Length: 173
Image (cartoon, rainbow, N blue to C red; front, side):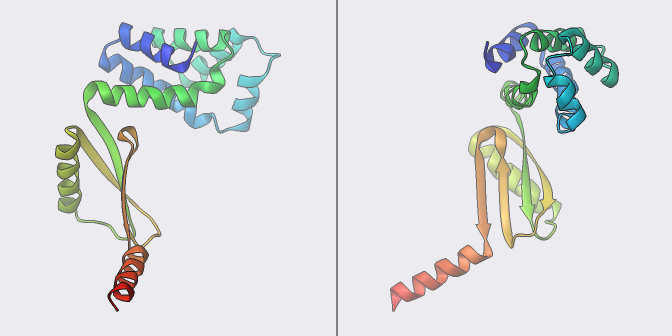
């Protein structure tokens, strides 16, 4: 069973709000999945699948029945290691269902909120989706806008502008 089949089953049996609850629970698991002890427990063939689920449920205090059942199914099928993929697909699916997408604006300097709102507005109208952008400071000279769920990346870097200007000047000579 591929990851998309798990997502399809969740979508068919859950509301959008419940999908977001499941996503929130699973995304916490994905954050701790980088821990070596976690990986050891999840991938160990010596630990029974129900003990793996019990470990996750108890340590993260998950009470949602569908989330627990999903974890049980993944554990039985030895697919707990694929939770990061599942969470990424679930995030994109929720965005598709709600029409709300989250993206990032990377720049060396903090942009004014009105500029970010203008970029959000233009992207939203261009893709006919509701796009919310969060600013992150980066070390590169330039601006990059990235909306992962829509596979959109727009970047303008100072060095690129300078090199293109020089090429155009040389061509003109």
